[in-house]
Image 1: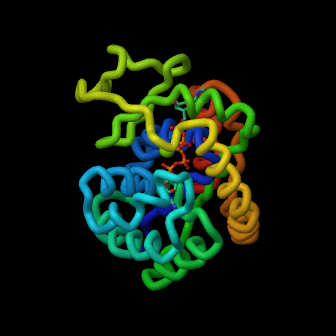
Image 2: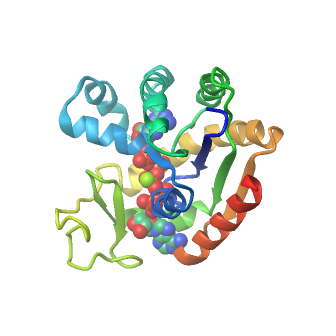
Amino acid sequence: MEFKKFLSFLGPPGCGKGTQAPKVTDKYQLQFLSTGDVFRQAIKDETDLGKKAKDFVSNGKLVPDSIVIDMISERIFEEVKKTEGILFDGFPRTYTQAIALDKMLQKFRARVHAVISFDVPDSVLFERITGRLTHIPSGRTYHKTFKPPKIPMKDDVTGEDLVQRKDDTPEYLTRRLKEFHENADLIKDHYRKLGVLISVNANQSINSVTNEVLTSINKLLK
Ligand code: AP5
Ligand code: MG
């Protein structure tokens, strides 16, 4: 396990975590694990996990730490066997989750190698979130203006329907941003002390963000 890589994307709703993830997982052969995607699929499938998470996710609130940590600890070692490591999107999202992840990895003499913090003013996020279109089964996202699908309201890869997420309204976004800001500084301080925090400017074109993300990860993983 020591040689496996564990990376995390940290940033407010709409900052571009899901958009940038495939570039990083492709380049570094990582498994992608988005807690938001897992919860949305579980809610759609009406599993036990979905039933536990539903009210929190649909109201823009954080799912309780114990549910998130149990879910990750059940999956992490199966997922990591498939590739060179894991890119987490939206996890850890609280200080408690960060400490739990460190402990899970310590058991296998592994650690978090890089946490990429997406910096972008809140004001930019309203247009991104309200114009977003999502393919729930894969987590792929599009934007009505900034990244339109080839055929309106259809996923480019499967041709299946795109939807607007229920929590993608200005009202829920305000709530999700509050949750994010209440937790982000403690998580950043933790990873800064460990020397693995990277900040990128996420308030630029999608391609420019990709370049900055890949260049920064390259430096840290060297
Ligand atoms: P989650 O799914 O993680 O949502 P989020 O953090 O709110 O992030 P988003 O998916 O909204 O944004 P993103 O950064 O991926 O943006 P995207 O790339 O799509 O979590 C949802 C819910 O699940 C939470 O509220 C909570 O309830 C629960 N949850 C999940 N994890 C949890 C945890 N660890 N603990 C507790 N609860 C948890 O981009 C947005 C849009 O902008 C897209 O349309 C895209 O095309 C466009 N775009 C992207 N980049 C750019 C750019 N540079 N310029 C212009 N447009 C852009
Ligand atoms: Mg996302």
